[in-house]
Length: 178
Image (cartoon, rainbow, N blue to C red; front, side, top):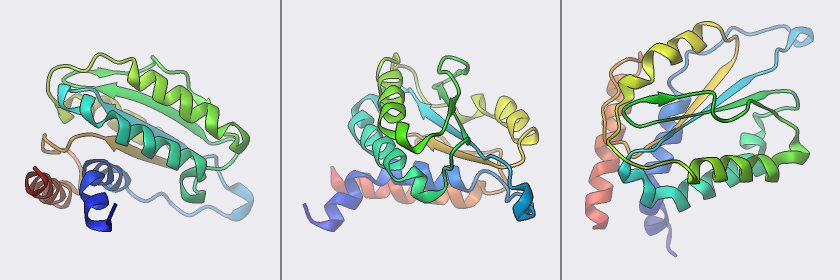
């Protein structure tokens, strides 16, 4: 497969990952003797449109786990999973504590959990806002990745304009593909 087709095929997932990485303000630097465990939160859109994107989402989860999130995940870091469509559902997947040797198992468990979800309704990012804001306030180091179709506008972060422009670009790429 040539590079442009590969990029177009994975554009929604790539957008979701990029958007998620910019949702959380940078944390304060800590002295090396006080490096805190990081928290990672994977949020999966379970709207009807995401069902057809499951293979790309699963591949991305596998890649992220196999590379320890590009070297960002360290032993002891926590990894949480939420799902949403028009409503947010938390606490359904047990919090994971990262061990690199468990990467395949963790990826498999996340993919099985997401695959068992009921994919219906539309996407509503506002369902995330209250609880996500609370987690942000209570976290020293947090990385949020949102796996979504990019159909709903984000209206509650300091980066809304840039993220929504990326969504528009992703939608344009998708329409070119069809």
